[in-house]
Image (cartoon, rainbow over all chains, first blue to last red; front, side, top):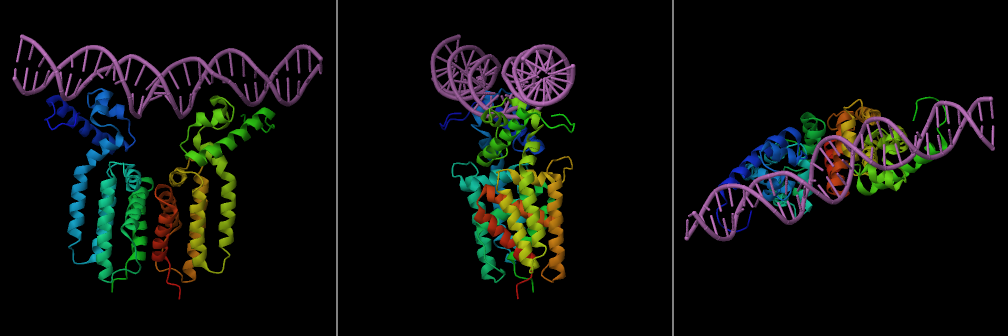
Length: 189
Length: 189
DNA sequence: AGATTATTCCGAGGCATCCTCGAGTTGTGT
DNA sequence: ACACAACTCGAGGATGCCTCGGAATAATCT
């Protein structure tokens, strides 16, 4: 794990892949607070090796999420071109909630990351609020809003709903989103 | 800590009070996941004594919250007699959010308690949804609702907002509540 | 007061993490 | 085959959870 441009050693690459695969499985099953020692064990690697590859839990999680995030942001870009700005906004909210459902505890890490510039997830959070801002702007222009809001407001709503989905149920989270979207959007004529 | 009706020994009572006082201070400062060993230390008591008085963290927390909860439920009862059902509902939501702001992490324990009958906080959660149900019913009768909802929906909203207040800021939580209440309530004529 | 007893307290100890770091091992380029 | 950088290892210090048997002590009895 040095910074140089040289290609990493073969065993290092193998271990890294193995760690990521097991981490994904364990986080899915047990949430983002699962034991890192357990992940290392399952990957057939000593704990020190895990830390050599990923300095902390968030770094591991961040790597795991990078791919998924790309897909999510692509979806966001698509939605910016969709005919109905209101429907696009709603779809975006649901997409992020579904994304956050991957690992229990993810909502908390996202909410944390939006303020904390040092967080590995910060960049993703910024992008999410950014997409929210644009979707809002488009909806406003189309006269689809009953009241105003910002990308951060949307971000908060998405995270809150994702958290409710973890704590209570996905249905309950859905009802919360419906409520808030009813408050935000103009009645569909 | 026996079950009998006999009055507890003086040292036991003293320790119990001291533990509760320190626990409150520490939970306020560090949240509901603070170290119990630290609390015992600050209370000048061994860890075993803490566990003799409170079998687990939730029991300690539950005792700490009992008083505060009474006040909250009294407030809820008051609100049921208030002239404007819509204002009462909004006030209730804000009251619970303020209540949950006491300790970081409380929102999560409440959300957990509503389903888990074994939780020391379960009873309180049930009462909260109950009050929500009644406030909703009154608002519905008064024609103050744009759409329907249940006490559990209100409970979810309150918890989500309390959690956002912890993770992001009280202002952000306020905006979420505004959004959702706009969705729930009829426009004030 | 002194003895008796039920109650309460203590804290070492087993277990599970987290994370670090020096020493040992191994892939790779020459 | 050699040498060295790159990588891996896992013991070990720190913290926290919770339990349990023996010590201490407040309350009660004589």
